[in-house]
Image (cartoon, rainbow, N blue to C red; front, side, top):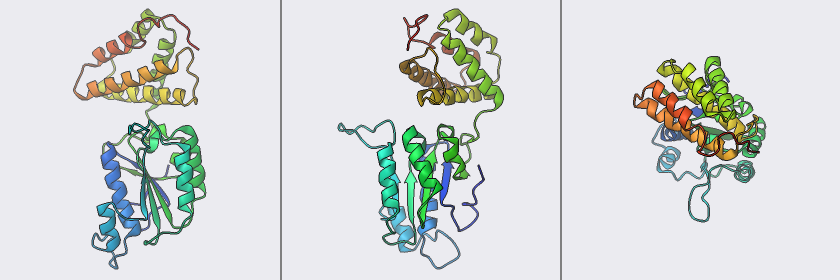
Length: 276
């Protein structure tokens, strides 16, 4: 993935992947880049912050800056994913000329929540973008996006953001080993694996947990085989890895986290049972 020049030049690439430590930080950066893209100020500084377009972006009312996020269900609760229908609607809108500015900007909030079909539809859009359109994909978990989607975007990485290139090889091997042990559905084997690997440092633990989540995401999206683990169990493991990451941030001992990963790997009653 090429490093973006979006921070250093007035010209903004047709697609940027904004990686940030929080969704709020990613959206703030996206709005800054959107302002730069539509700014109509006559000076060299973009965005100028004073022109009509910049003021409208700041107020969240610019007709040519559109934010796409997960839709709400009939109870008003936000859905789990951005769907392919949402991306198709965006694609249809993107070919319509801008209302006021010289270009249109689409901000995809939580881009990693696009389901596989939506990501494939987005890929087609990124490969053949309409003229005068900029796409800003905001994410806190870039590795949940298809590599082909990431490679079509210029990278804007904020301090503290997850590495879009993913965990190192050692972390990936540990993650594969842990999930292989869990797949045995044998408490003793899972515990033995955790004890054998509990002496890694905090940084390695963080990378390992990230790698576990990435592999689980691939299993949930059917990019990797899940073996004997059910979808419910995959989701449970994902939540467990997130919980351990939060504990790690408040200085919980690595050995304690491995203990949790051993004890809570599978729901009670599911040990030893093959689940299709």
